[in-house]
Length: 415
View 1 (cartoon, rainbow, N blue to C red):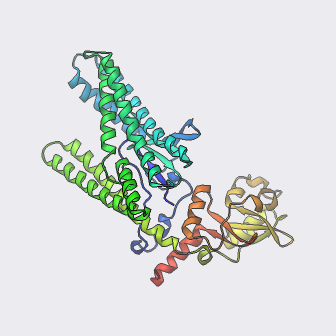
View 2: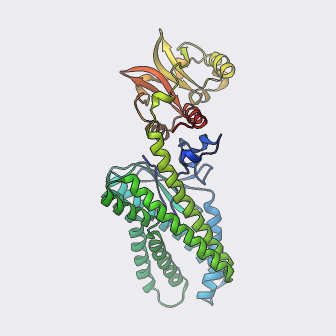
View 3: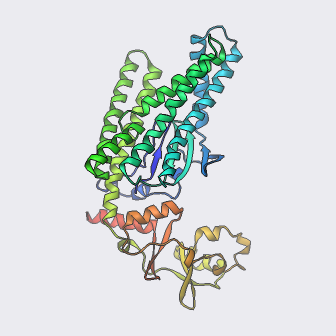
């Protein structure tokens, strides 16, 4: 299952998961899914929460302030003074700032367009984040069909197209060269540009996902269609790099550099998607039973957290424990639960008081694929899962277990 990201500004992000045959030794851990998207994308810090829309968390990455200032400055000292001479200096800066805010509001609506259609197909959407390249919606699952993929992907550009037409109509209400006329004309232009740009048939742009949906409907093979669309995305990415370099050598240094950077970002995202598909297929061939820890550390439910930390964590390096009652597992304790308790209370709080009861645990079976297990960890925001067969705990699978397993296969050159 591919974690989906739709982006409305410039690009969509894809997880950087490489082909296992090309993983540098010692770097396996960096290619496993993380429990939060922000741990693996450019936006590595905590997002600024803006609220929720349709139950979807809306966040603002700190990198957004960079592009906000850049867009405002470009409009205030470049575009508006050249296109609309005669305004006051403060007007240029005020309209430039308002334009930047409304521009990103349009990007947010672009993402909401994707999300509404995804929710209509019962595909969960975790969050939408605005950042330096525009916006990214984290859609949690693959579409159930090529038709669903098509409509989810096309919803964003259609939203931008509608916004462009709306702003065009509003601009006709304010003829001349006044601030409101300039504002609406620019927003109309930029939304139409975004709609057209995102329809370029290069994955992971919206157009690339539309193209993938078409190929998917023809080939009936999701994996093959993804690889074809991603290779087309690479082509468009390299083309943009070439165009950007050409513009640099013909005097447009700033514009050419920006186009080249977008091309690099697009080609890198497409390459990463190719590698992720290969990696996903490879992990899908291996089972949880091959990587899980069968001898799981077990502690009695009345053991204090202080003893647990001193005797198990600090001395033996254990990080996850089954909590037992009369030798029967009744729950699970991880570092996360321990850290939520003040250290001054460790001596009086027992493992049984902070454990997650066994019946409430997310779990996997020994016959599940490693890929599905990792995606479950990612979706649930955990670092380990108990392995249960026939209602009985037979082990624990953690991210570290998968890393160790992959490293062993790498050393032995086992396919």
